[in-house]
Length: 579
Image (tube, rainbow, N blue to C red; front, side, top):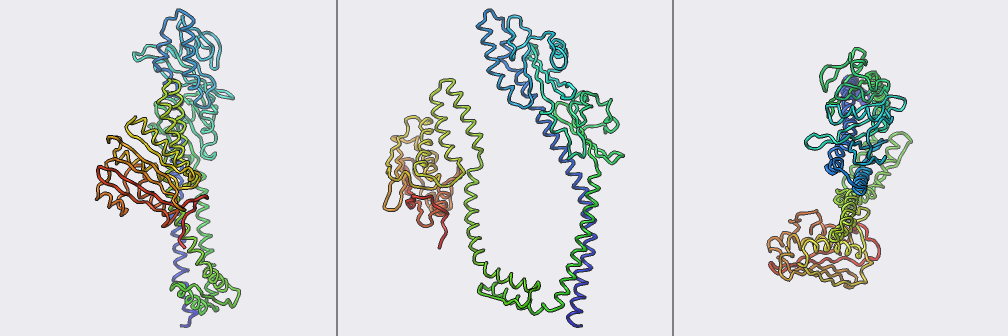
């Protein structure tokens, strides 16, 4: 049997027949997988939508519950006022405490606190007294009487219409259940539930939100808002239990999910999209199978023509590359596919050196990214906002010690959480250390003396971040410097020829010889925020190679001296690459 027949038989047994069998099997499995994945996708969409709606509802519930159970508010509503000054103080407290709170969430159009205390004024802002004045959904007196008569403390109601509204009502009660008033919160339906309810599931379904009384609070079909379940078409689809799902006779998927507070969300999703996806999948698999069959036949014809010897030659040259010889070249004899392969082979051989260089660079960048990821674990905005809030409260209370502590923390974290670069000026690194020491001085006042030996000429030179503060921190955490009599830390930054020498010396407890040996061998990295001595040493090597050094001298019960040396850099240092 000649080579041509062998190739044809081989093609039929190895390619054609297995491709047909695999295409049929893949089509069947893909069809089943599409249906399964579509149902999973629908269930996940229903679950996420339910979580989003539940979260929004709980947010508004939390706001009115927080207001309705505020001890100071209840106390002021129960007082008997004898002068205008006391009434004004209560009005100011309500405005200061709840005016901003009522704006935390979107969609709140009106927020009022109703009371019936005859000695307390109605300011028309947040404090109101129920009367026959009209407002959305009726009049104040009827609404107030309905809230008082309700057996539950918190309730939702709706105002259907072209621009529907929602009303959240909450009794103001103390721990004994005595009622002092009611909270009225008017919500814009579109802002609260509109975007979640309109055209859910890419327009292929509908959503319905029902309260604990099975009344429709929100729906994709807004004409159903405010109706009880029994008067809607959903009653015939309802499975009869919570967190259930059914496939209707019309090929629709109906699911119910339970929310907090006995609320429920129902989803009705069309299944025709699944059938469309199934048909598309089958046609795609058939088309791909035929395409690869014809493509494989075309390639076999090329192989049968004249490429066997050229492929063998190409294989030999590839063996040379595998042995490490990149100076190989193939002459392309024709402009066919194998000729293109020969040209591509020549290009590949020429680019292997540059690709190896790129691979080395990529490894360095990956290591750099890992260090940046250490700093990105904390949300800087959250910390800054929290510190600003604490500083504001400390200023308001006149606590200067807290103000100084918060200012030091702000300076410390602003530097530590700046992820834009791992390189900084020595002046900034020193400011970071000062902020840390200010914090420790507030924590251990008068226990530790800090001495500075600074060469001002090096302040505008560059260094890598976070090389001094972790060492100073070790003097407190491991050296227990604050427990030593006559505790002293000496921080020195000096220029020695073309190098910058950083030194931190303390008279703390020192390091045990066996522990010091492990640290010097790189076998003990320490505990804490991750920027230990081993980490500093690795980053020095990453940026300065052998020119970046760190060594430790320590005597138990006498103290420790940590020295860092790196080149004097007037420009920002880049990642070090050997050679």
